[in-house]
Structure formats: C-alpha cells, structure tokens
Image (cartoon, rainbow, N blue to C red; front, side, top):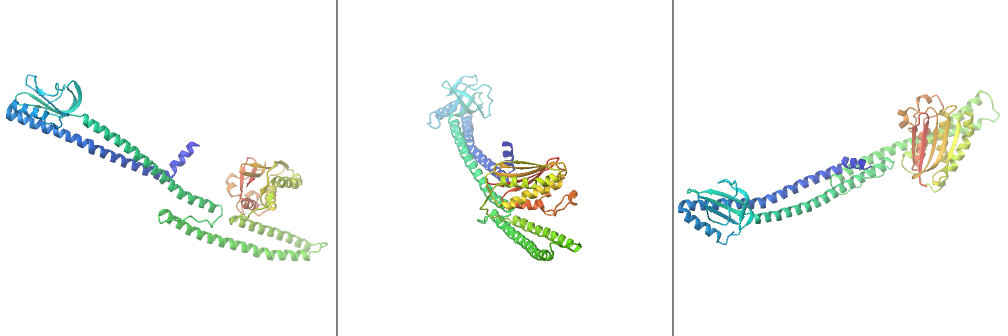
Length: 454
C-alpha cells in the first residue's frame, strides 16, 4: 500500500512541479547563503591578509633603509599604538637566531619565508591560530608579521550560525510554499477530475468551475464548451432514438390489437396460425422497443428517485421458485443460496425482470446437465444478486462487450434472442446506482448485480 502511495505521489505532476519548485528554491537559498558567507568572512579574511602583507612590506622597507634600530622603533610603535594591538603579532630575530623584539615566542616550525601562511603561534604562553608572513632582511635577520584569528574565527562562527538559522527558516518557508503549491494544483485538478467522473457516470450537465484568468480557468472554459457541444449532440441522439422507438411502438401496438381482435378463439388453419405467429413477433418487437427505451433512460444519466423499498431476498426466492420447473425441463440443476438482505430503495418489477433475464440466459446457454446457482446476500456498501453456471462460458475477449446492445457471441446466434438482454440488465443496475460485472469461471459464467444502500 505504501509503495503504491509513493508511486502515485511520484507520478503526480503536482508533486513533480512542487519538488522542482522546491529544488530551485533550495538551490537559490544555498547560493544566497554562500554569497553571504564569502561576502563577509571571505572579505574580512582578505582584508586581514592584505594588512599583514602591507605592514610586513613597510617594516621590511624601514629595516632596509634605516637599519635594525629603525625597524625596532617601527615595531615598538605598532605594538603600542592602541590600534589592533590585541591582534597584531610581531617577532624579530637576529641572524644568529636571538630574539630581538616581539610578542611571539618563536617562529613556527617549517614556515617558509615570503609566503603568507596560517598556523599556531605562541604568545605569552598561549597558543593562538594566526595568519602570518616571514620576511628575510638584508642582514640575515628574520621578521614575522601576523594577526590573531580568534576574532575572525568568532565572527565566522556568528556568520555560520546565522547562515544555518537563515537556511533552516528559508527551507521551512520553501517547504510550506511547496506544500501549498501542490495543494493548489491538486485542488484545481481534483475539481476537474470530480466533474469528469460525474460526467462519465452520465451527468452531462456538470461543468468545471471557472474562476480567474489563469491557465486552469482557460482550460476549464475550453472543457465546458466541449461538454456543452457533447451534451447537445447526445441529447439529439437520445431524442431521435426515443422518437423512433415511440413512433414505431404505437403502430405496432395497433397492428397487434387488430390482429388479436380479428383472430377468433376457435379459428384454425394456415391464416390463423400466421396471425398468431404475427402477434407473437409483434409482441417481441414491442418488448424490444421497451428495452431500448429503458436502456436509453439509463444511459441518459437521469436516475429516478425510488421511494419504495424492495426485498431482494424475496425477489430472488420467488424467481428461483418460478424457474425451477423450466430448469428441470432443461435437465439443469437450479441451486438457491439466498441470505437475508435489508430493504433497499428500488423498483421491484425492474429488479425482478433483471434477475429473470439472468436466469433466462443461464438456462438457455448453460446446457443440459449443468448447474445454475442463484445467490443473494449483503456485501460492503450494499447487496448483490449473483447468477453462476457451470456451462461453457464465453471467450475471454468478449467479456467487455457482453453488456453492449445487440452484441451476441457467435455460437449463440442460432438461439432466440436479440442481443440486448445484458444491456437491459446493465441499464437496470445503473438506474439503481449499481453495477453489473461479468466473469468467466472456466468452466461457466458468473454475473453479479450490485445494489448500493442497505
């Protein structure tokens, strides 16, 4: 479950956009923090090193021009001028290694002349980290000029802490912005998806909400214009289908009534047989038109509001009893597994007709010696009627088409029928807000009708 949720999140364009926005924001924050860090600590370090090099050059020049005495005066002045006295470091040694003047105990081991270096120096028995440069004088003496880095290190620590805190705050805002961006996109897309699901269920009057002038609103307007056109076309098709069905059913009913009125009960002979057969055919056509109208009503997406409650348990029991004799005549074993189901809102006649249609199909196609099982019982969210047989079933590739009107499996075309039985049953299920599911059992076929509620 968690893997599926993660996959769904990764596949979501809203998540990808939010992550991309978050990544760009994090990179921007990181770049700003680095710029701030190097713009403060880096600049101060550079200024500090420049002062070291400048003072070293000036003192070296004083020693070259005025000798060691002049150099000692300059160093003494630097140590007592009250300017950066706590951070300035000096050491003057003669050519024979004797300390002449300074506040540093000794030269660092391995330090090279003329190169700005960093290391640990000892001042007044205290080890300190410093930047320094060592200059070689003409008389062989060596001069160290440096600066204590403790203040700079303290400032670096303050800047680093400020950068970390600022980064965390920025990341918090970036995370919040990323979350709000994803929620905003999900909300807009979710509204379109909800409308699309309602439209798929048959409610073509639904429209996508329009607000503002952004890309989502423009897309919503385009979708709504497309839906309006589809609704007009579907209404036209339904109206034509309904008009044809109504207009054909009326004259057929008149012809049927005339034939029945003129057919005497004691009539015999070819003419009487032809009239009786014609009445039977007309009855089948009228039933066909009624089924077509019922399917059209279901496909229109307009569900009636049922105020009466139906007892699926009683309907199933009655139908099993009604078809028991027909099953026995066809050498088919009819099994009933009916459980008590709470009353559901619906049309009793329609549901009975649907279950009767399923039993008709099962007895017709299962074949002699097979078993037909009728089940009724509660399921999560409602109840279901189920008809299962042990007959030959149908090819797997035809399963998605069984509920389409006028579709018939090739091997059943020689049997009576018009190919709209399951279409009619599917329409009845939809009229009740339910669904129809057909499955191959190998051998046999199983048809489930689900009814919500209960």
